[in-house]
Picture 1 (cartoon, rainbow, N blue to C red):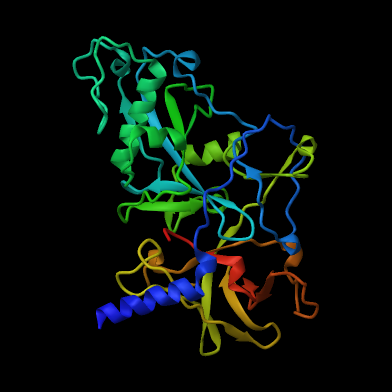
Picture 2 (cartoon, helix red, strand yellow):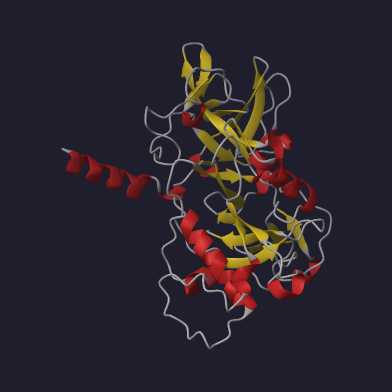
Length: 365
């Protein structure tokens, strides 16, 4: 019976839910740094697949550890892990967090400067790498990247060798001139599985900048300040004209995290996973539409979670690109011609879609 259920599930996934799967390697752009003009919001009626875009291209990260700081000082190593999600018509960013206690943080640890001392007997040896002749001098940058690699493997489910790690290592930044002993290493985890326990989360930019928490768990102020002040990590950029890149780039707006709704009698309620399930271990295969008297058959999402005695981490959250230009104010009379429409009902804000192409389930899928 279980084998039949598994085969049925695989068949449904392959035949009917391909729109939700992550496509191939994200195209990276390594061109010259382009001047940026004022941010231009992306209109949702112009939804299209972005075949060329960039992230961090106009804000180069540091790569020379010895040049940018005093290597004789101990430091804190923070992992800033991101992925570019391209399931929706426009790409968006997700960042990796862990919850060791009462707040969400980037993984970090304190590192002794002795890792750069070749005579130190307790120097970290490479994992799963051939032993290197001790007479051969190792470059400081190689030692730093090696330290990042070990810590990344410790904190995630990454199983590949250091050469593979170098392909996803993007560099580092301090994000502040006040303290160069806090180093944030930026790692691109777009096409790899790294989650290994229930205390790890993916969060979109909206959760960091607007909500300041993941579910009801606050994000550490230090991380919030990085996003609010430096703005280096906030947006993916698209070229205004792919054929004329000298025109510069513009920010792609980031989507919101909304709560799936269903009808319970005469009221709307949020949808929850079953006991023992959550966004990290369960994928929704079928989405029920709601029949609205004016908007007809729609997929409905609430801006806020409705009061409930259920576990907040079991509420079904979805990533949706919204635009206030497509939000109906007051009575629903003139309906915008847009894939995602907002409206207010009983003093609550809702957003709806006609097609599942314009929303995706949050979490590790």
